[in-house]
Image (cartoon, rainbow, N blue to C red; front, side, top):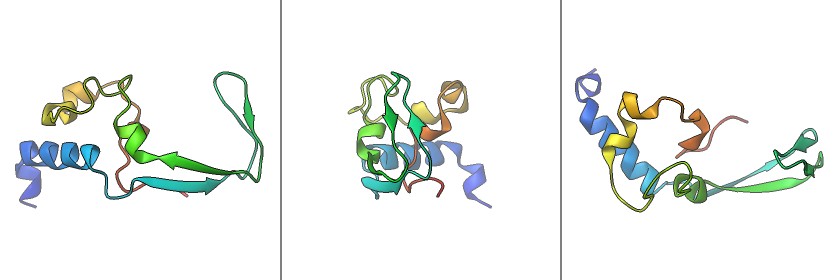
Length: 93
């Protein structure tokens, strides 16, 4: 209950998890063909490795990705950012 009263602390924790994710890489097995934006297809049955560290340090999503900036997680600054841009503990099946 107290954490809800500490929004800046929450932003600091999230930024720390972005810079140093506890889970750095995950793998998933494709259950269907997946078409990428450039037209290439990942066939069903392939195992894909996903770098959470890489996602969290992608400069096209996170400007100056090596800089510690808790205000990245200010609700105003999160508008328009994909919910999959920050996945410190992985996401979904």
